[in-house]
Image (cartoon, rainbow, N blue to C red):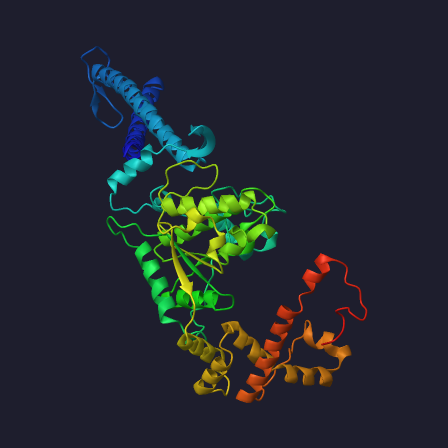
Length: 511
C-alpha cells in the first residue's frame, strides 16, 4: 500500500511543481519587462515638475503613479522569493518519492538472497527474501490464489530426487548433466530408495481370467489380507500368512491369481535376496521392501509383501547347510516386523514414524526349518496347501484350456498319475511340441539355427500340434520313468563312499 501512496504523492508533486514553475516564469517575465522599460526610459515623464504626487502619462495614454510602480515591483520580488521556496520544497519531496519507488522496484526485481540457516544440527541452503510487500498485497486480495501453495510443507509430499530420476530419460542427453554429476542422479541413502520390486499386472491382459482358483486358497488369502487392513479391537491379527506344501503344487501361481483378482500389486522378494555377502544386507532389504509396500498403502491402494520360498532363504536344511548371520537377522527382522507392523525403521534410523500396516504372504515347502518363534501363532498364520482332486482337475483344465482336450479327458489324465504334482501335467503338455520342433530343426538345418533363432525379425511360429489323450498318457509315462531313474540310480552315494571304477561289476552298465 505504501508504494501506491508514494506514487500518487510523487505525481501530485510533479503537477504542482510544473504549475509553480510556469507561474514563476510568467512573474519573472513581467518584472523583467517593467525593469527594462524603466531603465531605457521607455516610460517617459510628461510635465515640468516630477514630484511624488504628479501623474506620469504613459505612451499608451494612461497614468502611472511612480510610487505604485515601485510597490508593484517590490511585491513581485517577494512573490518570486516565496514561489521559489515552495517549488524547491515540492521538488525535494518529489525526489524522495521517486527514490522510494526506485528502491521498491529494485527490491522486487533483484534475485532473492541466499542464506545459510541451521536446522536440526545441519546446514541447509534456504532462500530468503523480503515478504512484507507480498504479504501486504496478499492481505489486500484475500481471494488471490497462491501459486506456490503446492510447495508448502503441508502440501508437498513428493520426493524431488525421485521425480528427477524418473524423468531423466524424458530429457535429451544434450541437456543433462555430464556423467554421474548431474542432478538427475539421485543421491541414494537409507531413506531414499527406488526399486522395481513391485509386481505390476496388465489390466488389459485377460488370459488369466479363466484359470482355476481353489476356493480354500482364495478364502484363506482374502481373509488374511482383509483382517490386516481392519482395526478390530482387542484382537491380535497375525501379520504373516505362511502357505506351505509340496513342491510344484502351484502355490506361487495360485497366490498370483488371487492378487490379480483382488487388484493388488505386491512387492515381491525371492529366497535369493535373503542371503548376501554383506552382513545385515538381507535384513535391511526386508525392511526396505516392507516400507515400500507401506508407501503404496499410504497413497490409498492395497498392497502386500510377498516372499517366495522363505524356508529356502531363511531356513536351515539339516546339517548340510550353514546357519549364517544373515539367516538369523532375517528371522529376527520378520519377528520384529510382526510385533511392530506400524513402526518399521531402516537400520540406523531411530525415530518414531508410524506407517500403515502391510500384510505379508510367504510361501515355502517346509516351515519347520524356520526359527520356531517366528512361526508361532501370534506372528504367522499357517496354511497347508494340499490340492484335492477337484482342485487338481480344475488347475489342469486351465493348463489345457486352449487345446483340444475335454475336461473329462483331463480328469482321466489326473487320475492316471495321482501322485504327481501340478507342474507334472504342464511338463507333459510341453513334450507334445518336441516333434514339431524337431521338424523345424531338420527343415532349417543346424548351420542356420543361429540366424533363425537369435536376433531375428521373424521368430519361428508353430501351429498347435495334434494332441490326444493317448499321446499325453505316453509322454506322462516317459516322465515317470525319468523320475524313477533319479530315485533308483543314486550315484552320489557311491561316489562319496569310495572310488567307483568301471568293470564287470561297475555301475556304467546299461540296465
